[in-house]
Image (tube, rainbow, N blue to C red; front, side, top):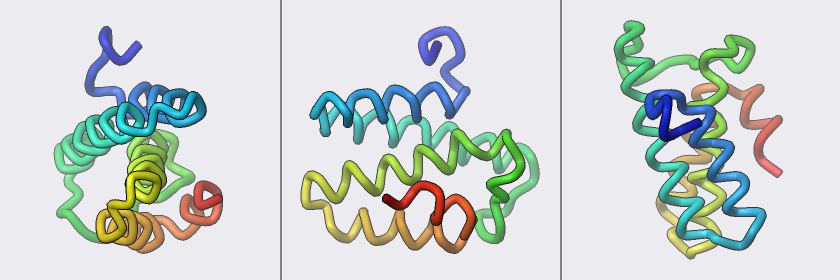
Length: 104
């Protein structure tokens, strides 16, 4: 799906989750980073200014938020501690609901 719809962050999040589950952490990191950036692009096109809430209950945001969590998780796994902390903080600040749901 990501190949057919590369701007669809949820597809990248799903690839990141699958890769992580298969212990392909670097691939998970790459998929998550791609989806994260695609999600940022979509948020900015929708008028988001780079800060403020990204509500979990708005389904269109879930791909971006899942990619952000997947990026944090993969960064943790490869000992990219500062990146992981930055991503978890960004997730918590953007959507406390997503943080609660995705930080496991």
